[in-house]
Image 1 (cartoon, helix red, strand yellow):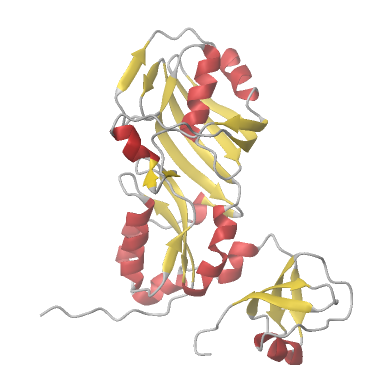
Image 2 (cartoon, one colour):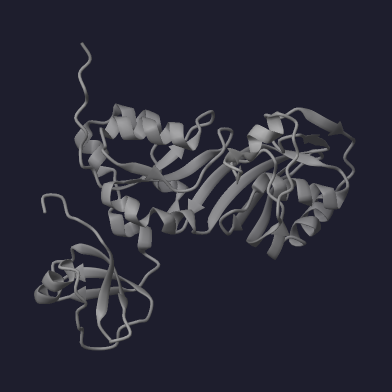
Length: 302
């Protein structure tokens, strides 16, 4: 007889160091199982060949997951110059091979051409949907679908290492950036072609790779230790200004009513806290000058 595991109300953010070979969803499901969590979601897909920072939101933290999906991210990418593949990475079939006659200075200059707002065409081997099917399904069937270019922003590119046919770059960029495509476009500029042989995400929003936990570390922990490893829900929205409300205001806010607060209140979304410094969720200054509830959290036991 199989016993059904009891699902637990777990809430918080886990900064997972996703291992190579796992899809983002496989890593999520493994962590969710270890926590016996009722509800969880990840915040921005990493390819199976990529490793690194994958924030997982549990319980009430899932209400703020999209802020992390939309946040800027940083990657360390390793490029193999002179060889192109049909997927843009080491998983694909080799399309072209040629000798590389590029200096570090030339490579650095090519990288600088891609700083700022640029137009990028997503790769065929991607999870983007077309008529309900992922692009990679069409690609595997040998069908090419026209993709619209989209605007992305590359904030920084630094060249960390450069050899004759291999380069390591660190890229900070907006959401929706395909580093595989960026690598191919840089190499196209140099006339030598390239593909990714390594990709590691090192930052998402204010989270850094040094804060992460591996699946192996998580497996070795007790349930209590796993819970202690979770960051609070408000860690996902640290970029928003914070406001503290008195107990009466907290009561009415939690009834779904707007509340007054003396003093200047910033426009836009706000992090709301009680006087006991409990995170309440998000609110926004409404046209009548009250703070209106936008996305409140339910505290365990409430």
